[in-house]
Length: 231
Image (tube, rainbow, N blue to C red; front, side):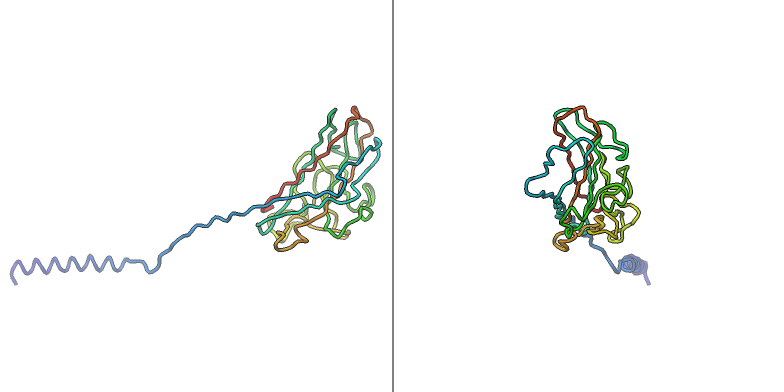
């Protein structure tokens, strides 16, 4: 075998080794990743009864309530949606504040409670009042766990947590207890498209006026609801 023949054989073997190695290293699977961003959203609406929410003139130290509910509706494309509630007070004179302890009100301090029920409750007579033996307007200090007392901070509504639909029962706000009429967890609300009863609730309000005031101007008490998903 001459020198030229040996050179070509060596070159052929080298080329084969390179090609065979490349084939051996080829992957048997491959991956294509497609990114999809869902355009999801949610809204919350509050519908008041005919005549609005003007409670008229009320004596200092007296109690008053909404005698018909406001209907709160969640329209959402999320699997579950929650709510937050926050109160505020505005006035043309001296605005009142929310009483931090409703059993010890001071001048210009309004005691306020909010409770959500399912839509089966249509009469305020079912809800009772505050104080000892209260069934719906619960708590003396708030807002906080197990209390329906309204304050100026934003608080989650209902039995809340991050494990929908299994909710933690240790963080209830603005709802009644499971033994009472209209009980609804409120923490993981399904969209209207899946469950109308879950997406729609009744909101009831109860007030005790302060024992004294520095202003006789009307007090406008606002309740702002924030939709949140996931709650």
